[in-house]
Length: 197
Image 1: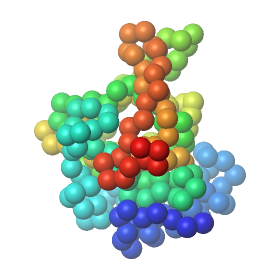
Image 2: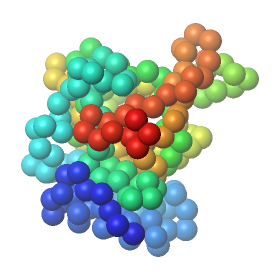
Image 3: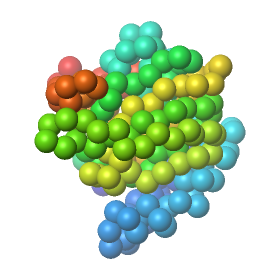
């Protein structure tokens, strides 16, 4: 399978190779995520691999609030993506889902996260947690798949997402906090257009 590296460096190529090998050998998403934890922690702890341009907000953001979603890598068949999500100070994402499993971690800054579940069409807040640089978690739908994050640090927060779809280009859902109504949602990427745009 050919690959698409938007950030074509030895660090990213080595990480993606390890991820693909791990996923290929794993018997479940849970096992793959558990096996990848040390490698993902290593990536989050490395201050030098992510260039400044991929840590910048986007004034024309598809998510609003200047939030920038920067694609770093995606498989040609769109079964895997690695991207950086930049949320400026005092900005927050819409409540949204991902429709994919993988790992999400904070590379820079601080965030508060609210995790929701849907029951009978309504949203229920099930957990609030604070994240600092280096913190990360597995995302395995339907558990923890619906959330909202807001930056609480004075600087923009940068999170790294490793997910098993082309997250910026697939149609997902955003949710109204009061009614729980789901709406079609596509976040897009700052640096790559989706094929049907």
